[in-house]
Image (cartoon, rainbow, N blue to C red; front, top):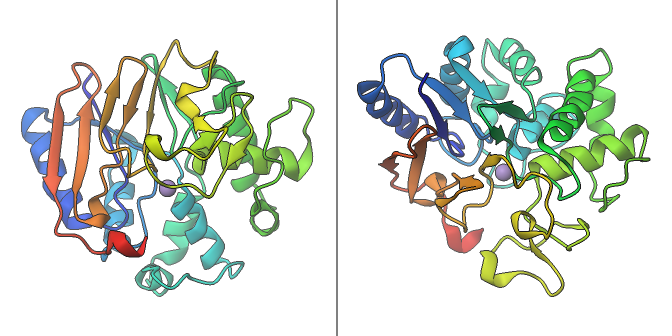
Length: 274
Ligand SMILES: [Mn+2]
């Protein structure tokens, strides 16, 4: 089975459509993995969400920080930020169905020796553990108390994972590791301010994937979220956020042979303002 992993769409649905056409002419009925952040900042988040939902079982889409932000905005917990473009979703006739679908997406997916997450995995987590921890959050997001959880989800503490964490602190740490992480200390303590490339790590920090002894080294981690990395292919990593919304590309990588498929984007946001 041919699997194509696709980077952060961020509402760039015309580019998604063009990319799916390219992929579809190489492989009829492909399996599609989305690295999260389907929505926001780009102009057609509503259409992007509808399109991925309509793919049904052909698509696996993990939740990104912008997707969670949509859930929090739709439930009135958070206000939109200045450059958010979520209004068309919030006023859509099918908004409740779309939000309900979105909150039932996973935060991690492990298959064929590849672990799909939006941002990263903490160095202490094995791939199997990452999926188990993700499912702890998924159970809450899919359960009756999901809005209460969203209300407490935001925050950057605790910055460091501990197996003994419990309750909302545990869940928050899992969410932050899977959906916001870029840099951490060698011991896994997370940092959430720096968004530049690997050569601009804050003192004492390194990219999560270069943490020594990282327990996911034996699988290939497929992720997005970090547009300043660009497309990065290493034996143990596939970084997919090639900054579509910033005027670069939307990228798909075929997992079997790492063939790269890309669509250029005119750019809907100014990276100077990022
Ligand atoms: Mn992101």
